[in-house]
Image 1 (cartoon, rainbow, N blue to C red):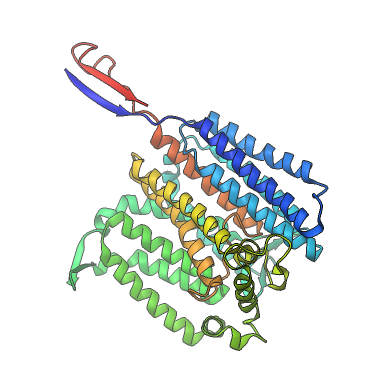
Image 2 (image 1 turned 30 degrees about the horizontal axis):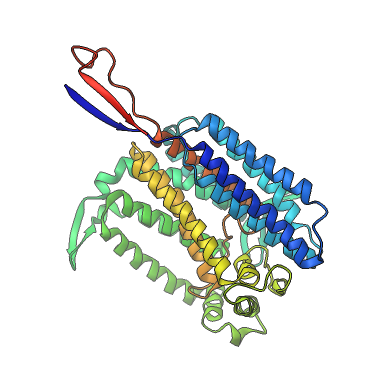
Length: 456
């Protein structure tokens, strides 16, 4: 008699609900704390705001419970906590600037949650996306080119990454990054055996064969095109870094990292020498105080604010984050550091780390190669984006124009990131489901030949 041991993940939807209540407390509590800290009284909309936020999160929980019962129980609460904190920080700036960014961000969160629910209800199996590998890649390239079109393409703050249609504006690159992950995962799962073949050996590292350099050269060219024509350093770094790391994960060949690193270095030096906007950002990075009266003002004020915030921050209402240009978007981390200190920044980075860890954990337990690469790529989107943003604000690397996921103001980014979380939950639901019961007729001479033991 043989025994087949099947480890079955518990659904843990009750744990998800409990964590969601804690996340809701962060969002509503942050909103209340901002009102008390800035005006000395509770916001007049605290009940409607808290009720709407609760409706969004409970709706998300119910759909996950019904459509993806075995999905990871941690992802949704972590995202809800970051999004709620971001709304509180944006509301903090609205009170002193007399703006309405927080209301717009809540509207975009509603759209994002709606697409989150739609993705889970419509996409019942993530493996269906593999059929659209090349379609997704083509659509992503079209989206990246759209800001270059006349009439609808617009240049804002020196970067041509926006399209305007009537009263609405959108960053198509945010949707393109999701489609590119799907395209990368589908392509690499089919061609990883060929890409993993070794070429010449250099310093104990097997370099890839010359005939296999086509994909990485194409992505390098696309990322350089984004940098040159759209002047978007952040998106250029994200696209090339994402493909390079996914290529390494798929092939397990360090030679790709060596080749990709060399190409990145060559591209960086060339961009510095040929393009003034890249050179300006490097100069600001090296000496922001020396450029305080010019373009270094933004990062210098952010540094002053984070220094003033110290370890535990000034508290909501006692800082001056409104002095930082674009404090609600590009420099939301500076606002966080001034109001909640280094402790607040570390807590948020830890939450992002949990998102990446749960994505990689999902990739490890996923049963199909496409799902493994897709979950890895989606997790890398958050990892690379947070590293580039936080690194730029803290002067670890030159400043780029990316937004902080779920925290910064920006509808395009928020909506795209909610869809990414829906995809991760769909993959984790598939990966954590019990394996098929093989104890039925046809699997032995009798029903007792094979036993399935389920361990909770």
